[in-house]
Image 1 (cartoon, rainbow, N blue to C red):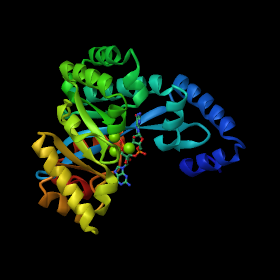
Image 2: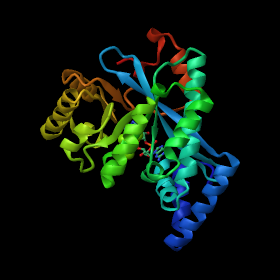
Image 3: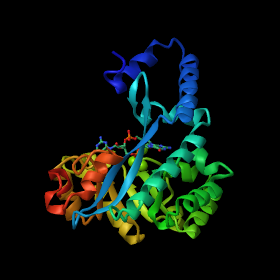
Image 4: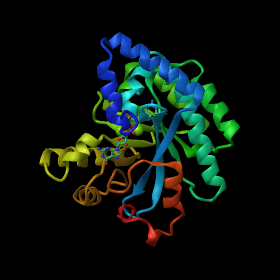
Length: 287
Ligand code: C2E
Ligand code: MG
Ligand code: MG
Ligand code: MG
């Protein structure tokens, strides 16, 4: 029964663990095995230019294919991997796999847009991080501009001084930088202005409200305006409906990402989207 529906059965399984510590230890052990046995995979979600409908990027999102529990989503294991430090080697795997895939897509002529990778606080603070990114780019022969790293406001602001120097070094390398879940943290706007950020991703909780709630619409419109003023590309996350898309277009938001266009897809399914002539693409991609 556990195999039948991964996401729920994992929670069910977790509920059987009598203490938090026991559960954590169990998941930690399973994560170590997952790394060794190569049980992680990436799904890719397109980012769509709202004016033209073209794909401008893709976000890589980790999943864990557990042999017993099925497909497990990051919400169920990334926080534990962060607590026990395993996010560092897992994040290294994600970066290498995303860069390898981006290079393969470039080589096959399928996709010439950046792939975005989520970075945890511990990874950014890890002393080998910059070197690791540089090495992976070199190994995979991926031009740095095809890699975008997504960081949240909290990750950056928690240690603003050291973040700033790492971010500067990444930009010098040519890697692109995005602020993820924008609006849920506590950025100082004047500080934000000084950071070398290419992309601002408006958190989906704000996007969710835009078509139904005037306050939500006002906030999103203000963030789009701010991003434009700071010369940042603005991505609306979690676009699920045509009404939300229509509003974002009236505000001249540049890019959207969400189920309205496509769910995150395994690489092979994502390639089918890329391979399809534009006028034959599945309906959700045509915006
Ligand atoms: P995120 O980076 O903000 O990623 C967006 C999440 O929203 C993804 O969930 C995606 O599947 C989901 N999403 C996309 N479009 C829609 C939509 O229209 N509606 C709704 N309701 N949701 C949508 P996912 O894949 O479960 O990932 C959750 C979070 O886990 C990510 O949030 C990110 O913070 C973290 N994460 C994912 N992959 C990695 C990774 O490789 N490394 C690290 N450190 N964190 C990761
Ligand atoms: Mg993200
Ligand atoms: Mg996000
Ligand atoms: Mg998030």
